[in-house]
Every structure is written in C-alpha cells, then in structure tokens.
Image (spheres, rainbow, N blue to C red):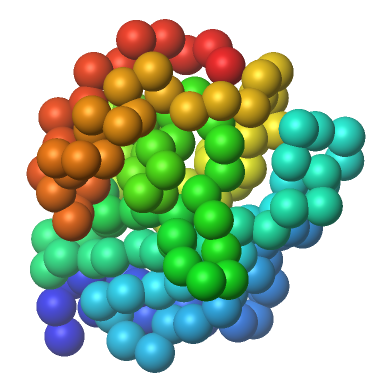
Length: 152
C-alpha cells in the first residue's frame, strides 16, 4: 500500500470513528483519489446559513505534497464570495501551496478554510477573478498564486 493510501485510510478511519468538527461533513470518500466534504461557517458571519462543498484531489505523493483543494461549483453548490476564492472554486491560500506541511490533514484544511470564511469582513471576489478564471488550469495546484496579504 502506498504512503498516500495508508495516510488517507488513517484519516478516513479517524473521521468515521471520531466524526468531524461542527460545520464539516464528509460527503463522499469512495477512493483515495478524490474526496468531497461540506463546509458551513457556524455563528455570526458573512456566510451564515450557507453551505459549501470542497473537493480534495490527492496525488501519490500525499501527504508530502498538498492535495488539490477547491470549492465545488455545480448546480447544487457555489463558491463562496470571498477575496481569496475565485468563482471557479479555486482557493488562494498559502497552506495549499508553499506553506503546506505533511502534518496537515483533510480536516485541518477544512478548519482553516472555515476560519478563513468566518473572518471575512466583506463578500467580494479577488480583483483578478475574471482574468484568472478565463485562463485557469483545471487543477489549482498548477497555479502559482501570489499571496498579497493574510487579512480578509
């Protein structure tokens, strides 16, 4: 069994036995390539009552390499209106790029994104949304994001 499969099996077992934090739900994890989780920001926030879905795509180097993570955009789900989230669901977050660490887990990423949304002061798209979306790769890991700030 590959390292990525062992690690994902461990994470999946923990999710199934211990559950997920409030506002995070495992939707689908049928294999070790793609998982879907729902994300809701609890309490008072710009996103009160909204539910989003995240897609995690894992390569054989996980957890050494970060998963490709993006918000699902389809008939049921939309990407949150946020300064670090593009309308195609791609997320500009340093932990999904250069600041990724193998100690992070799927749930840790979900909690980080939940916190990012909870701290949002204004619902708006990144200033370069239209240009980025027009030329974005399918896999957000192929984008070299420039991290302008840590505040939203």
